[in-house]
Length: 447
Image 1: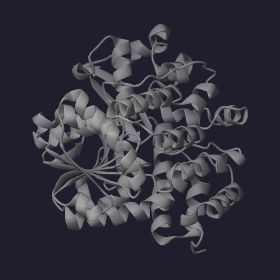
Image 2 (image 1 turned 120 degrees about the vertical axis):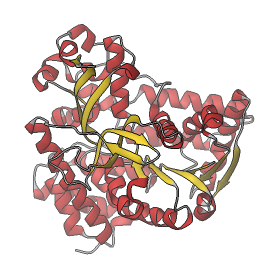
Image 3 (image 1 turned 180 degrees about the horizontal axis):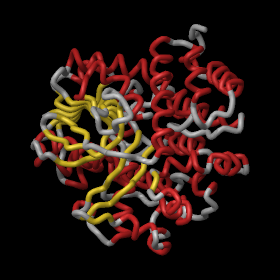
Image 4 (image 1 turned 180 degrees about the vertical axis):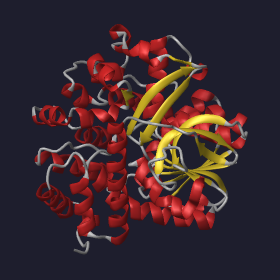
């Protein structure tokens, strides 16, 4: 079985490739194609992958290519993690809103909208190529903003396009640890959109363990979301939000932290990855050591702006060797290949899971995954404040998709202006014009 990795020169590709090596025999994976538009990145990541092969004493038939059709041909699964505009584009995505006093973040608010405006046309084109060259494949989307992008390509690929993110399942693992339980032994009642979700129950049979956890400040302080949001706010909500909700609940604090000198995530990654890709290595072992050192530094700086906004200091996040998005992808592959009926939290069409959204709206909820694909489990009633935010952001996502496909400035400004984090239409206009002046993909858009 062949896996195609689109964005094959990306920094996180070794994490995916290592997971493929570890699971290849059980899943029947024997070939991997790495596609990237940047030959230099493919060349730089290759010795890291060879280092992993030597370490594990195992290798797969591995081919790197700048030809998308060649990479897709014969693939059973297509993993896609691309960044249109590169990290330079991400820096612009984050800094432009910040200049207007609005949260600057890769997937949240105007930054996520601008990222989508550049990305959706490219992803739809890729989806069309997949439909032609690998029509029976499953398309596993990591490309951000993951839920929005998955919704944009589902009209082309249908339910065979599934979005993956590790933020919800990372929350599940941390909550399970705080409860002293195995995450496989309990059920997590979670609902929302990608990077906009809430854990509203942790079920052990008929018993909900979440109220007891919310009442225990010591246990809440033992994991990231408990520290980010604080016990008082979590008890007020009666739920534990996805970590990205901090950009809504602490929006002004995040802007203040960044303006006070906290280095934006995009700036750090651009500087770090430029150094990594420019480095010269002599052996695969040296390449692997260098990549792991860079990854450790990257993980230590994760969510620095959110921690500063919450008044936290020091390192509050560690590399998760048990999961990550590569773990989510392989769990999905396993469930489909072996017809497991496994419950996984993924991004797919709603189909009644959240009754207040239509069936085609892509949501992030627990799904029963099998050879038939991802079947969303019913969520039931949710608090009104969460419903209102989900509905508002979903509408923004859909307008952003329309804007991207029509190359429409008017619709792009509408999407930005209607986002809950943007305070006025004039601010939205200035944000889009600043984006259009700096992002070549947006310069010739129609009024």
